[in-house]
Length: 250
Image 1 (cartoon, one colour):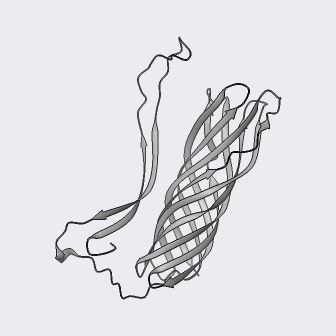
Image 2 (image 1 turned 30 degrees about the horizontal axis):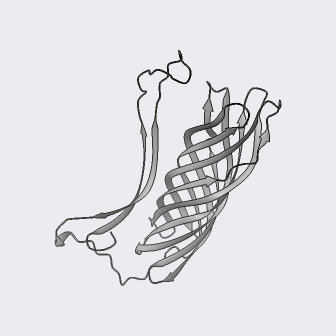
């Protein structure tokens, strides 16, 4: 709750749809196809509660926030959708693929209460876990995104003495590759901007929990030649994440 009836929040969900019916493939006649779509979502919300005045939430505007001031260390665990936009310049054209799996992250930062209920924090982070970022032709072509690390700036607002909501803005770096039988393509490192949001709440004097979601759109990699020289290719990776966190304030 922000005011008497107005509230904000964070939400994440996954929808796995069933496989579609077989349809005719007009591109390659005689090869019928099916599709199995999915959606991974993470976002923030704004809402209004139509309850009576007797149910109002006491937002305690006159309290003094600042519980997160100082060094904060946290561990996050959730699910991520990793995608690859791959250009084969001499053979297939553009190929868009994605995969999803568990992603963990470690972060260390410093938080400071600015004035009243506003807050600012800076963090460094490293994300690790499932590296799969799509496959094509029954795993013959497999894409990987790995070693994600970066920095973020997090402007925030105390909604109560123990609860802090924040936006997450930053820059991250990763490496990606295309794995084929005896014909890998290493795209090297590429960077991109990060944006997201989160909310965290103290459970004890020093331990807090929260929820966080973010998106990283990496820039297009350098153009490389595969090991056997048959393909000239580049890659544009992306990561969408939503998960829970537990942290400690020193």
